[in-house]
Amino acid sequence: MTGIDFQPYIEIARERSLADPAHDFLHVLRVAENARTILTEVAADVDIVMASVYLHELFNYPKGHPKSRESGDVCAEHALVVMEQLDFPEEKREAVAYAIANHSFSKGVVPSTMEGKVLQDADRLDAIGAIGMARLFSTCASMERPFYHEADPFCEAREPNDKAYGLDHVYVKLLRIPDTLHTDIARFLASRRMEWIRAYLREMAVELGKPATHTNA
Image 1 (cartoon, rainbow, N blue to C red):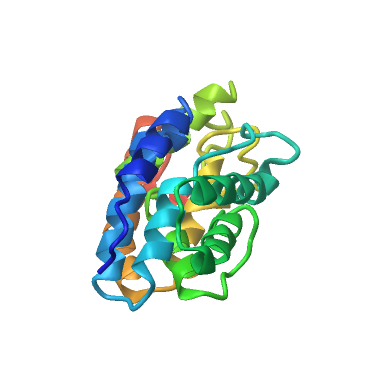
Image 2 (cartoon, rainbow, N blue to C red; image 1 turned 30 degrees about the horizontal axis):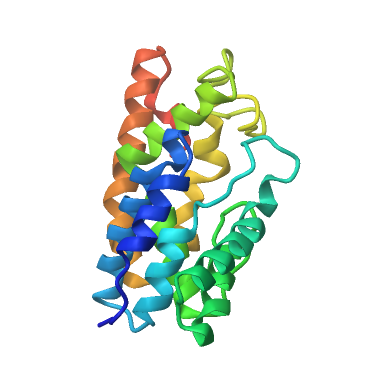
């Protein structure tokens, strides 16, 4: 249980989240719901987890920006300012900032705290399944890249490059996510979402006239 009223944090997330559908306020709300589900099975500080969830999208470099991997670090600095303004418990602020700074897939850090692991799991669950594929193609459009490689859409004979082709992001990141999750409940939730991604790849293979075995899924 927590004695903190998180409504002001929610409102700040609403005001400062990006217009980009892949990282907008609805994304924050979904991650919050994922975190609450994980917390039913995992012992962690609820205040730290929920503050990190609501403040983890205060700042983002655009996708493809040379400093995009540093987005979490800058966002953590913004979160510290917000927590001071809202009088969040001082002894918990650095733990929130740590979770935010190290949650992203691109940074490649395994958090040392359970709260950081819960945020990371909750955020990564939103990258897979039907929502995850919608986010993938939203980002694909914003980066003005094609949906897939014309000759080799499923990366059979080439290394995936998600800076060039949208579908390659499945192979660069999405299929790897289950192996990076920390909690049993997140892995359970991920299993159904991964089945959906594999089904999506099989359907795309049919529509592109490729054998289903060509999905590498």
